[in-house]
Image (cartoon, rainbow, N blue to C red; front, side):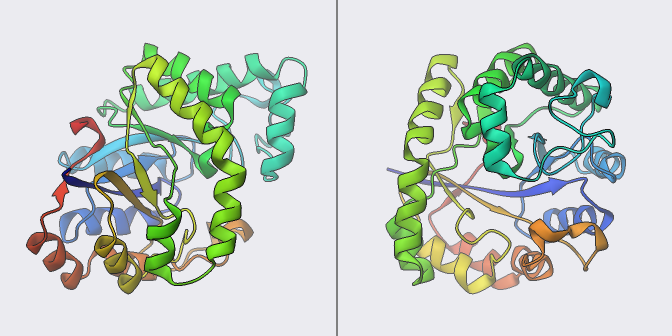
Length: 284
Protein backbone atom coordinates (compact mmCIF):
# COMPACT_ATOMS: atom_id res chain seq x y z
CA UNK A 1 0.00 0.00 0.00
CA UNK A 2 1.28 3.46 -0.91
CA UNK A 3 2.43 5.85 1.80
CA UNK A 4 0.80 9.27 1.44
CA UNK A 5 1.57 12.34 3.54
CA UNK A 6 -0.23 15.60 4.34
CA UNK A 7 1.78 18.32 6.11
CA UNK A 8 -0.48 20.83 7.89
CA UNK A 9 -0.06 23.92 10.06
CA UNK A 10 -2.80 24.65 12.58
CA UNK A 11 -3.90 28.00 14.03
CA UNK A 12 -3.54 30.02 10.80
CA UNK A 13 -4.75 33.49 11.75
CA UNK A 14 -3.84 33.21 15.43
CA UNK A 15 -1.10 35.85 15.20
CA UNK A 16 1.11 37.58 12.64
CA UNK A 17 4.04 35.43 13.77
CA UNK A 18 2.06 32.28 12.94
CA UNK A 19 0.93 33.67 9.59
CA UNK A 20 4.47 34.69 8.61
CA UNK A 21 5.77 31.22 9.43
CA UNK A 22 3.03 29.48 7.46
CA UNK A 23 3.64 31.62 4.38
CA UNK A 24 7.40 31.09 4.52
CA UNK A 25 7.05 27.36 5.23
CA UNK A 26 4.89 27.01 2.14
CA UNK A 27 7.00 29.21 -0.14
CA UNK A 28 10.39 27.86 0.90
CA UNK A 29 9.62 24.73 2.88
CA UNK A 30 7.49 21.61 2.79
CA UNK A 31 4.15 22.87 4.15
CA UNK A 32 1.17 22.13 1.91
CA UNK A 33 -1.94 22.91 3.99
CA UNK A 34 -3.09 25.19 6.80
CA UNK A 35 -6.12 25.28 9.09
CA UNK A 36 -7.66 28.75 9.49
CA UNK A 37 -9.10 30.16 12.73
CA UNK A 38 -11.70 32.48 11.19
CA UNK A 39 -12.37 34.38 14.42
CA UNK A 40 -8.77 34.88 15.54
CA UNK A 41 -7.11 38.28 15.74
CA UNK A 42 -4.93 37.91 12.64
CA UNK A 43 -7.46 36.02 10.49
CA UNK A 44 -7.75 38.85 7.98
CA UNK A 45 -4.00 38.87 7.43
CA UNK A 46 -4.06 35.07 7.04
CA UNK A 47 -6.75 35.29 4.36
CA UNK A 48 -4.76 37.93 2.47
CA UNK A 49 -1.72 35.67 2.48
CA UNK A 50 -3.76 32.62 1.43
CA UNK A 51 -5.22 34.56 -1.49
CA UNK A 52 -1.68 35.29 -2.68
CA UNK A 53 -0.60 31.67 -2.12
CA UNK A 54 -3.13 29.84 -4.26
CA UNK A 55 -1.15 26.59 -4.02
CA UNK A 56 -1.54 26.59 -0.22
CA UNK A 57 -4.65 24.56 0.58
CA UNK A 58 -6.63 25.99 3.47
CA UNK A 59 -9.22 24.38 5.71
CA UNK A 60 -11.37 25.51 8.62
CA UNK A 61 -10.04 25.12 12.17
CA UNK A 62 -13.29 25.24 14.17
CA UNK A 63 -12.80 26.87 17.57
CA UNK A 64 -15.28 25.90 20.28
CA UNK A 65 -12.95 25.86 23.30
CA UNK A 66 -9.99 27.99 24.35
CA UNK A 67 -10.67 30.83 21.93
CA UNK A 68 -13.23 33.42 20.89
CA UNK A 69 -16.56 33.05 19.13
CA UNK A 70 -17.84 34.53 15.89
CA UNK A 71 -21.40 34.80 17.21
CA UNK A 72 -22.30 37.62 19.64
CA UNK A 73 -22.19 36.36 23.24
CA UNK A 74 -25.87 37.01 23.89
CA UNK A 75 -26.77 34.49 21.15
CA UNK A 76 -24.67 31.65 22.63
CA UNK A 77 -24.67 32.36 26.40
CA UNK A 78 -24.12 28.69 27.32
CA UNK A 79 -20.85 28.63 25.36
CA UNK A 80 -19.06 31.92 26.04
CA UNK A 81 -18.70 34.66 28.62
CA UNK A 82 -19.53 38.32 28.00
CA UNK A 83 -16.13 38.76 26.26
CA UNK A 84 -17.03 36.03 23.70
CA UNK A 85 -14.49 33.67 25.26
CA UNK A 86 -15.06 29.90 25.22
CA UNK A 87 -14.05 27.78 28.19
CA UNK A 88 -10.43 26.63 28.30
CA UNK A 89 -11.41 23.57 30.39
CA UNK A 90 -11.90 20.87 27.76
CA UNK A 91 -13.41 18.17 29.98
CA UNK A 92 -15.88 20.56 31.60
CA UNK A 93 -16.85 21.94 28.21
CA UNK A 94 -17.42 18.42 26.90
CA UNK A 95 -19.80 17.67 29.80
CA UNK A 96 -21.63 20.95 29.18
CA UNK A 97 -22.03 20.10 25.48
CA UNK A 98 -23.88 16.94 26.52
CA UNK A 99 -26.07 18.16 29.36
CA UNK A 100 -26.61 21.93 29.41
CA UNK A 101 -30.01 23.03 28.14
CA UNK A 102 -30.01 24.57 24.69
CA UNK A 103 -26.31 24.03 24.13
CA UNK A 104 -26.78 21.93 20.98
CA UNK A 105 -28.65 24.74 19.22
CA UNK A 106 -26.02 27.25 20.29
CA UNK A 107 -23.20 25.02 19.09
CA UNK A 108 -24.89 24.63 15.72
CA UNK A 109 -25.32 28.42 15.50
CA UNK A 110 -21.62 29.03 16.18
CA UNK A 111 -20.42 26.23 13.91
CA UNK A 112 -22.55 27.60 11.09
CA UNK A 113 -21.19 31.10 11.71
CA UNK A 114 -17.62 29.85 11.39
CA UNK A 115 -18.37 27.90 8.20
CA UNK A 116 -20.03 31.00 6.76
CA UNK A 117 -17.07 33.17 7.74
CA UNK A 118 -14.79 30.76 5.90
CA UNK A 119 -17.03 30.82 2.83
CA UNK A 120 -16.95 34.62 2.91
CA UNK A 121 -13.17 34.53 2.47
CA UNK A 122 -13.61 33.11 -1.05
CA UNK A 123 -11.10 30.34 -0.31
CA UNK A 124 -11.76 26.74 -1.35
CA UNK A 125 -12.50 24.52 1.67
CA UNK A 126 -9.79 21.85 1.70
CA UNK A 127 -10.70 20.25 5.03
CA UNK A 128 -12.14 20.85 8.50
CA UNK A 129 -10.85 20.02 11.95
CA UNK A 130 -11.45 21.33 15.46
CA UNK A 131 -9.17 23.18 17.84
CA UNK A 132 -8.00 20.72 20.52
CA UNK A 133 -9.55 17.89 18.46
CA UNK A 134 -12.99 18.67 19.87
CA UNK A 135 -14.67 17.02 16.87
CA UNK A 136 -14.00 13.77 18.74
CA UNK A 137 -16.94 14.84 20.90
CA UNK A 138 -19.91 13.12 19.23
CA UNK A 139 -22.16 16.18 19.55
CA UNK A 140 -19.61 18.45 17.89
CA UNK A 141 -18.62 15.84 15.32
CA UNK A 142 -22.23 15.32 14.31
CA UNK A 143 -22.98 19.04 14.07
CA UNK A 144 -19.75 19.70 12.16
CA UNK A 145 -20.76 17.12 9.55
CA UNK A 146 -24.40 18.27 9.44
CA UNK A 147 -23.54 21.94 8.91
CA UNK A 148 -20.50 21.13 6.80
CA UNK A 149 -22.67 19.33 4.26
CA UNK A 150 -24.22 22.72 3.44
CA UNK A 151 -20.77 24.23 2.85
CA UNK A 152 -19.12 21.57 0.72
CA UNK A 153 -17.25 19.71 3.45
CA UNK A 154 -15.39 16.77 1.91
CA UNK A 155 -12.52 15.89 4.28
CA UNK A 156 -11.91 15.90 8.04
CA UNK A 157 -8.86 15.20 10.18
CA UNK A 158 -9.07 11.81 11.90
CA UNK A 159 -6.95 12.30 15.05
CA UNK A 160 -5.65 8.77 15.54
CA UNK A 161 -1.95 8.58 16.36
CA UNK A 162 -0.71 4.96 16.10
CA UNK A 163 0.97 4.11 19.39
CA UNK A 164 3.89 1.96 18.38
CA UNK A 165 5.15 3.96 15.36
CA UNK A 166 4.82 7.07 17.53
CA UNK A 167 6.74 5.46 20.36
CA UNK A 168 9.42 4.02 18.07
CA UNK A 169 10.00 7.52 16.68
CA UNK A 170 10.04 9.37 20.01
CA UNK A 171 11.43 6.55 22.21
CA UNK A 172 9.52 7.89 25.22
CA UNK A 173 6.21 7.79 27.09
CA UNK A 174 4.90 4.43 25.83
CA UNK A 175 2.60 4.06 28.84
CA UNK A 176 1.25 7.58 28.45
CA UNK A 177 0.60 7.01 24.75
CA UNK A 178 -1.25 3.76 25.49
CA UNK A 179 -3.40 5.38 28.17
CA UNK A 180 -4.21 8.29 25.88
CA UNK A 181 -5.31 5.95 23.10
CA UNK A 182 -7.35 3.87 25.55
CA UNK A 183 -9.21 7.01 26.64
CA UNK A 184 -9.76 8.25 23.08
CA UNK A 185 -10.61 4.90 21.47
CA UNK A 186 -14.43 5.01 21.97
CA UNK A 187 -14.55 8.55 20.59
CA UNK A 188 -12.37 7.60 17.64
CA UNK A 189 -14.72 4.75 16.80
CA UNK A 190 -17.74 7.05 17.02
CA UNK A 191 -16.08 9.67 14.81
CA UNK A 192 -15.10 7.05 12.23
CA UNK A 193 -18.72 5.87 12.10
CA UNK A 194 -19.97 9.45 11.70
CA UNK A 195 -17.51 10.08 8.85
CA UNK A 196 -18.51 6.88 7.08
CA UNK A 197 -22.22 7.64 7.38
CA UNK A 198 -21.66 11.17 6.05
CA UNK A 199 -19.38 9.85 3.26
CA UNK A 200 -16.67 12.30 4.27
CA UNK A 201 -13.03 11.37 3.61
CA UNK A 202 -10.25 11.46 6.18
CA UNK A 203 -6.63 10.54 6.77
CA UNK A 204 -5.86 7.16 8.37
CA UNK A 205 -3.26 8.33 10.88
CA UNK A 206 -1.87 11.49 12.42
CA UNK A 207 1.39 12.46 14.11
CA UNK A 208 1.54 15.52 16.32
CA UNK A 209 -0.96 14.73 19.08
CA UNK A 210 1.51 13.28 21.57
CA UNK A 211 4.26 15.77 20.73
CA UNK A 212 2.14 18.83 19.97
CA UNK A 213 4.24 21.97 19.85
CA UNK A 214 7.50 20.02 19.93
CA UNK A 215 7.81 18.68 16.40
CA UNK A 216 11.53 19.19 16.01
CA UNK A 217 13.46 18.05 12.95
CA UNK A 218 14.93 14.81 14.28
CA UNK A 219 11.55 13.66 15.56
CA UNK A 220 9.81 14.38 12.26
CA UNK A 221 12.53 12.55 10.34
CA UNK A 222 11.94 9.53 12.58
CA UNK A 223 8.18 9.78 11.99
CA UNK A 224 8.91 9.52 8.29
CA UNK A 225 11.10 6.48 8.95
CA UNK A 226 8.18 4.70 10.68
CA UNK A 227 5.39 6.13 8.52
CA UNK A 228 2.63 3.52 8.09
CA UNK A 229 1.03 2.68 4.75
CA UNK A 230 -2.05 4.74 3.94
CA UNK A 231 -2.67 8.47 4.45
CA UNK A 232 -0.85 10.13 7.35
CA UNK A 233 -1.16 13.75 8.41
CA UNK A 234 1.65 15.41 10.36
CA UNK A 235 0.59 18.73 11.81
CA UNK A 236 2.53 21.63 13.29
CA UNK A 237 2.16 24.92 15.16
CA UNK A 238 4.87 27.08 13.58
CA UNK A 239 5.68 30.72 14.33
CA UNK A 240 8.42 32.97 12.98
CA UNK A 241 9.13 34.43 16.42
CA UNK A 242 7.73 34.39 19.95
CA UNK A 243 4.47 36.24 20.47
CA UNK A 244 2.45 37.32 23.51
CA UNK A 245 -0.84 35.78 22.34
CA UNK A 246 0.48 32.26 22.87
CA UNK A 247 -1.04 32.04 26.37
CA UNK A 248 -0.75 29.38 29.05
CA UNK A 249 -2.26 26.51 27.07
CA UNK A 250 0.61 26.70 24.58
CA UNK A 251 3.33 27.90 26.94
CA UNK A 252 5.48 24.81 26.36
CA UNK A 253 5.20 24.94 22.57
CA UNK A 254 8.43 25.35 20.61
CA UNK A 255 6.80 27.14 17.69
CA UNK A 256 10.01 28.62 16.29
CA UNK A 257 11.62 25.17 16.33
CA UNK A 258 8.64 23.77 14.41
CA UNK A 259 9.02 26.58 11.87
CA UNK A 260 12.69 25.62 11.48
CA UNK A 261 11.63 22.01 10.90
CA UNK A 262 9.22 22.94 8.12
CA UNK A 263 11.84 25.04 6.33
CA UNK A 264 14.72 22.60 6.85
CA UNK A 265 16.59 21.66 3.68
CA UNK A 266 17.31 18.26 5.27
CA UNK A 267 13.60 17.51 5.59
CA UNK A 268 12.97 18.66 2.05
CA UNK A 269 15.69 16.37 0.73
CA UNK A 270 14.40 13.33 2.64
CA UNK A 271 10.90 13.87 1.24
CA UNK A 272 12.19 14.32 -2.32
CA UNK A 273 14.31 11.17 -2.09
CA UNK A 274 11.59 9.03 -0.48
CA UNK A 275 8.75 7.06 -2.04
CA UNK A 276 6.22 9.01 0.06
CA UNK A 277 3.51 10.68 -2.01
CA UNK A 278 2.77 14.24 -0.89
CA UNK A 279 -0.93 15.13 -1.05
CA UNK A 280 -3.53 17.47 0.45
CA UNK A 281 -6.95 16.63 1.87
CA UNK A 282 -8.80 17.56 -1.31
CA UNK A 283 -6.79 14.83 -3.11
CA UNK A 284 -8.47 12.13 -1.01
